[in-house]
Length: 294
Image (cartoon, rainbow, N blue to C red; front, side):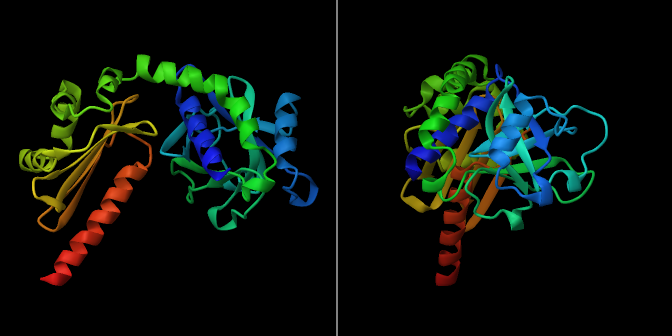
């Protein structure tokens, strides 16, 4: 059940990331006395009925979810007031249809509710508005089963997969997934230009040397993943590059001489991919262990 639910959630992110679909966030007033228990049904019905209790998010924002983010285009007008965002109900719609609905809470208040929670990450007025989408917990008591999630996002998923590879900035590189054609990927004009903007020539040389021994090119979330190490240095000199096939942005990390280096493309608003975070965490653990042995 848990594995299936996580898979469906990942598909949902892909769906909302498709250029053919437009995601909108509706904020809905809760029941009297701030009762959030009926938020999923309340929010969906309010949006469907075009109730005055439902309003579109005013500011542009991003919902962090899975390995990336769902961009939201605000209605404009006044800046969002946090007091009118938290402890409310929400409905996330795609092309006019509600896909997810639940409650909005501060992270420290994100109780283990039995429906989805939209955590408000931004703390200060004036900062870019960011949310974190958290699935229902515990799953076996969820108000929406994995099968229902699948029914809601199946069509969107198919559109997303088609759009991602046809319209993506680096969709031409998808043919290398599952191969060892690292040079074809890293020497691609756009990839090469981005790497040059993220690191100097010496750092780039180290990155490539640390990919002499390589794993097959993988695909995780929305990123193509390249992983490798320097010959006979599988635990001390390693590297990873994550390439977003849709928007063309890149994350990279390398361990060299007991130090870990990270490179983040400033063009993206997404959080660092889980693969890179895991690589950095493991590299820092190894680097610390080597340091203590000296």
